[in-house]
Image (tube, rainbow, N blue to C red; front, side):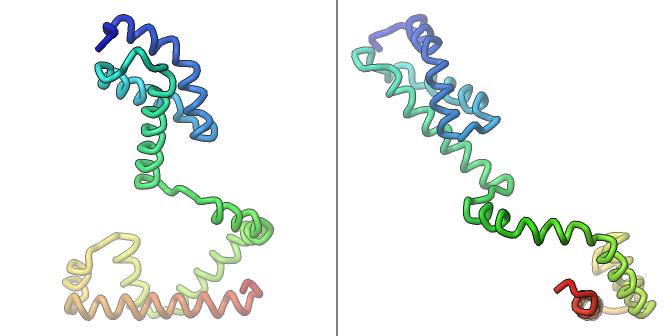
Length: 176
């Protein structure tokens, strides 16, 4: 390396504003830009010996920033829901519909309760065990004295009956 660590630290310190601005542009104002800057600084320090002081520092440092932004976006896309522009456009186009539907949660809840009341006691018990008590199929099968596969079939049919009832109720209520 043609520059010692103290000199490298000074050059890096002087470049912080430009690096941060570059990262903010790439991340479109993402709130985590300062975290990405820190990751960039760590990457730059770990490669400090590779820097040629005869070349401009900022273009070299920006390549590290660019790679850190890409790594951040990849990590985010794996760990949380990230919307692409097409999906955001779809949401914007259907905002009126979503707002109208948001006013109807009590109607939906009322329909759901009505549909639940139309199920048999055994079906409601099955749903309660599975979804309220979160019991595994094996436990439910033992309680109901049925095989696990029989409980799976009963649960499938019960959910189907509930879904069919909800669809019919939605059609009758003018929701779809």
